[in-house]
Image (cartoon, rainbow, N blue to C red):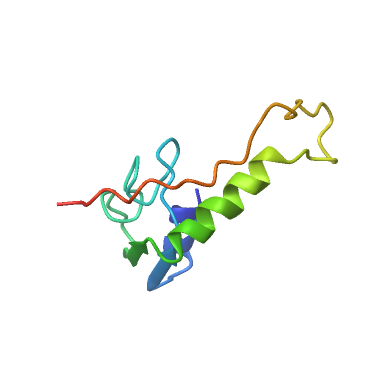
Length: 92
C-alpha cells in the first residue's frame, strides 16, 4: 500500500531501513514499485538498508508494546525484545 502510494505521488527516490519479509511491497515479497507496470505513474528508485539495525529495533520496540487505543489488546507480556540482528542477505 505504501509503495503504491509513493509511486502515485510521484516520489523519485525512497531510502528505507529494512524490508518486511512477510508483507513488503517494495521488493521483499512483491515489487509493487518496480515489477508491476502502471499506465500513468512511473516507478521510483528504492534502496533498502538505510540505518537498517536502528529501523529493526524501532519496529521491534513498537510491536512488543501494548496499544492503549486498541479495543481488545492482545497480551504481549511474554514477548522479549530481540537485540541481535542477522546480517542482510546479498541480492544478485
